Length: 304
Image (cartoon, rainbow, N blue to C red; front, side, top):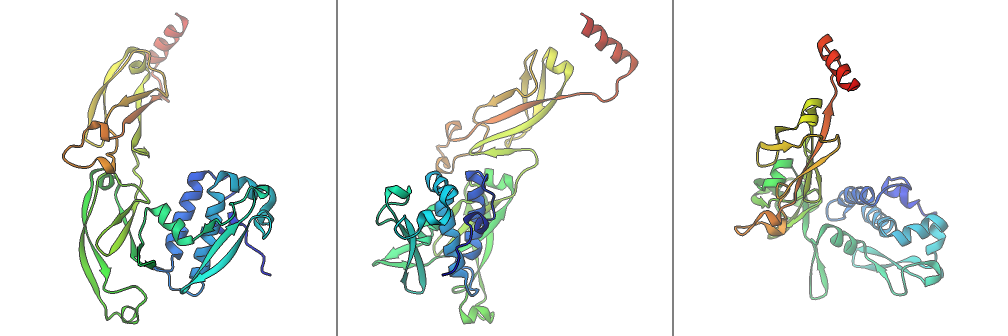
């Protein structure tokens, strides 16, 4: 019997990995090894293995059990994985009793179901059969994700992996796709006969947390002590804000409704309520070189 690979090794993460790190690792690997996209020998087994690892490590209770007992916690009779086949694909299932902290009798882990749940769909069922949809990736800029963008893409004519496609006879079809405002990395958009998974390039100024944005802004010691009106960047353009006297480094100033639009709130009736907020995090600029007069003034201030 072959020895099972460590789930952390499969996803390429450490035992201390956060939920977000596990999700990012799964997303990358699942897209790479999905049988619809990867026709290499063993891709289906690799895809199954990735989903099996994710099914355990993404669930805090299962992860805790795995960390304590390893694969033995899910062995037959202790809550384990098995296999069944449907068409060309192998499906992994698990069963177990509460003594193993396992998955519960009759629980099935279908790697394609996990993929659909994670990416928000992408397969349709007809008369009990699974109809596969092609999945493509597109990388867009941060501001394109915030504002929305229309792109022209070329998708293969026919299904990837068809003999005609491998020979280049199928060519490609140009499609115009509209990406709504508010999408983020991992967002999945369904079009007529294919799906697009979005990857967003990070921005140097804005850090995104959900639909909220955080930006660092440096001010001088005098501005922090005395107060000032400063100009900060927002996704809508520059905005003047007031720094209150005595503002401390690390203070977060909230700009309501200046974050990322909610994808569900896009449309003519969209308002600030359907957008996240922007937070300006105050950083203090400490001068590295002082003139004699500046030094004297600071020493005088310190002695007051």
